[in-house]
Image 1 (cartoon, rainbow, N blue to C red):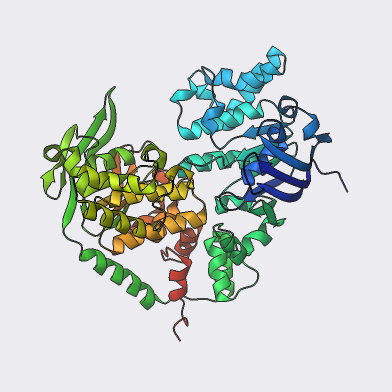
Image 2: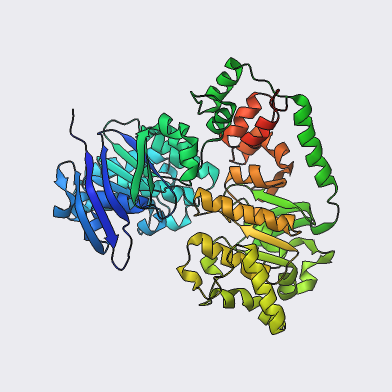
Amino acid sequence: MTEPIVSLNDVIYRYRGQKTRALDGINLALKRGEFMMLMGPSEAGKSTLAATINGLIPHFHMGGMKGEVIVMGRKTKDFSVAKMAEIVGMVFQDFEAQLFSTNVELEVAFGPENFAVDRKEIKARIDENLSYVGLEAARNRPPSTLSGGQKQKLAIASVLALKPKILVMDEPTTDLDPISKMGVFEITHRLCRRDDLTLLIVEHETEEALFADRIALMKDGKLIKVGPTREILSDVELLESLGVMPLGIPKFFKSVGVEDLPLTPDEGLQKFKDLNLKISDHEYDQITTVEQAALAEMTEPLIQCRNLSHTYPGGVNALKDVTLDIHKGEMVAIIGQNGSGKTTLAKHFNGLLEPTEGEVLVNDKPTREQGIFKLGQSVGYVFQNPDHQIFSEKVFDEVAFSPKLRNFSEKEINERVTEALEAVGLAGQEEEDPFTLTKSGRQRVAVASVLASNPDVLILDEPTTGLDYSEQRSMMDMVRRLNQAGSTIIFITHHMWVVAEYAKRGFVMKDGDIILEGRTREIFSQGDILREAFLRPPHFVEFSHRLGYTFLTPEEMLSCLEGAHD
């Protein structure tokens, strides 16, 4: 049996000042040329494990380590990070922090130059790796002018230029839109076919794990299970119990009682036919009829855009002649790739931006006439990064800020804070420092602080970014409850499963235009137009299309199986 290229033996690690172990008795071996995916909830220890492979732990991060990590025969504790960089490449979650050169070409050249590689060879590596990630045309551009997806590709190219034997990527697609994610994953799919490279990727996107050879699941600093990809992804209950999103297709077939679970749309279609399953058209029609009736009742316009255009200083035309209505009581998603105009549109709803042409009406009055302070009472906006919104040292003070600003009585302020914190599941945490909470907790504080002003509309910009699956579900379940209690909800997201499961209606944006709008089911039935907008439906929705339907969740399809109601 060949020696593993990476082995972690009884590794224990505790960050300085922390009581709990970030890694707790890790034993793991990677085979040469293998592609392993590391998955688990937030705070599981995934990034910490990744940082042991290139020696950042123990040499750079402060803490105590026991056990040993051996990479290609080198014990990491005996070699500096610079020495380990000769064989281990690392792409971080915050990839922008990795880029610092004045142009793309120099960024890729930086590593090889530091390793005193011959100039002719450096040029060859620049050409090869920019071509590999599809950035040849951008070679003379400053990295700051690239999109998020392009910056991530540049970070990958600059690491590949060092010709590492092992590549570690820590959540390489966080914050990227679906098509940029696909671009990065397309590179990783090609990388994993190279037998000269061993790949370890920390990732939340379960659909992308299909390409891995093995998956390692972590929780609370421990390895829970390591096994072949098919075996791990078939264990729906284990994934859900760990807060990792299970794939919809095996989830559906498990509920039908199948043992050998299909994982992909192709496999699902074949299994559906083999089992001779049938969908009841009557039940499917019932679902769509109820859906249409519910939306037909929402007739009171709350936000109206009329021929809205917005041009930023410098001439960037971000919105082009947008006309739309959002009604009281709706739960609406705005989707599209980065730069399509989603946030620009949403910022017009509460007066953060004013129209260049056309107008926006909120409660039948133009936003220009209402002003940002008055609009803030009826349209609440929760930003993508809660840390850009939070500033108080106590949760209570943060949530009380808006009612205090509006001179409410102390009694009313206390009532509003209590109601808002109960709505977001933070009752009893009034005295906590918001900055000591998890990202999900800080996100909830930001939502509560907006709810305290009792707005008619709540806008959430990327409410699930940076959260694990359990946190995403918890956040969106809370948002759904607010909607059921009467709030109108508008959310912007890159997560298509969130749209499928939570939005009742959607707007698809591309280049400042709305190219598709309608009920969520109608939007997801238009695969070609979605692809035009660089979006794609979840695998489960694609699978249902091939059967001639548009189901948004496994539970929905189950309820429409013939015989399900016998």
